[in-house]
Image 1: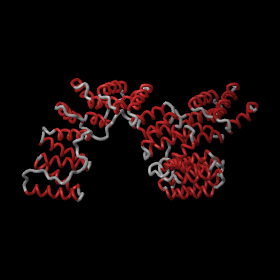
Image 2 (image 1 turned 180 degrees about the vertical axis):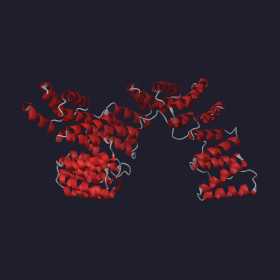
Image 3 (image 1 turned 30 degrees about the vertical axis):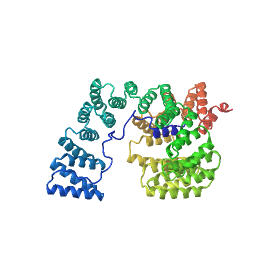
Image 4 (image 1 turned 180 degrees about the horizontal axis):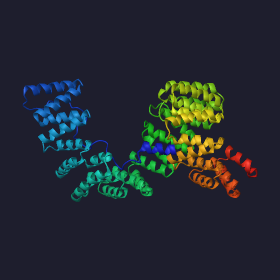
Length: 571
């Protein structure tokens, strides 16, 4: 399955996240907005009353900063629970967490038996990562037979350490001894265990949670954990039963579809997304996933239909045009593909679209149009200007337009003076032009700025070993690169090749075998095969070359070595 598609689905459906993380505190009593002008009723001195009137007038004029400042000041001054409550409401509305915590403390201290004040303070303490103090308040609320947000506390622990979460778990386990069936406590424990990677325990707790509180959401929590632990069959069974009795449960259907994708049951997944899109036709994210599934299932007409409907989407329009362009390329309708790619103006597909446009134009010999395209892109997307220089130069170089590529990189270096990536690109272009002196000059300049740049040390060392007789210098450079990146198979291959050039055949074969084992590549196969052939191991050499040809049948590097040493192998 297309990795890009799988990753997109994982991101957009949230399967890889924690079992259940409430984003908002589940408190129906909390004010969602600043209420109508309501000055707390009490006997206040004239200064306080005036300050509160100013606060309410400022709130009516949407100057909530003045409203908050005045109410907070008067809450601290009077310690009046009504004023403190109002200050808390305004601070929560403005998402001023520090002020909300301060006001909630005053409210709770001035009205210690007020459950709403206690709950609000607990929520603000949770936001401030003061979990133990919050837990004590939630426990007090639970002991009065009220609902307490233990799941919200657990969800907000995701940014603390595992040890800290384990400390919080101790309190959950203690309280569960008294309230073994409390759904909020069990849900919180599931989240804490999941965040700490203790998924087996999390699933056991989620199973209990669903047994005691068989809600659709709790079933989804259980099914997610089953799937994450490899028991996809149980997850699918649970979700199918839920959908049979509750077909409108979109969360369950989304999870079911994602599991089907992970199980590579793409046709079934497409059916589920077709249902979801039918229920929510304005959900562009679901429609994009449906279109991608159709594309994966080779139902190209259906994919085209869905992508076309998405072209007007603000969030996914560029993605839709990108995939429509790919479908057009598949049909060899390159002019249509180019038109679609030009409409990709934002998002993660922008650079890919620009690259594909360049590829199509160069393939048609339309170099001037390609150059104009990247010139415009360099002006339109200025933060990516250097990248567009490098794209164009690489495209020209790969297609044999080496002199034009070199001229372009010279222009880029006038703007990005001594930029390492541009210098390196120019060095590689010079190497292709057989101008090894210019190549070496640019690579040495990079090394003067970054002496421990393993990629550059390896590039220079390999070229000296492969294209000159300066084998000792090559060996020294590549040895330095190897010390910096001992596990890099490309560097290991270069080192093996340098030893071959020096006649150290035993060491060479050992290194080249290591490189080919870690990185099966046609060029490494060419090197190892030649080393084996020269040392008399001709049958092994032929097997290695055959392996390389299977990896890349059109490899000119391999073919030139075989034609030189064993041309019969190619017949």
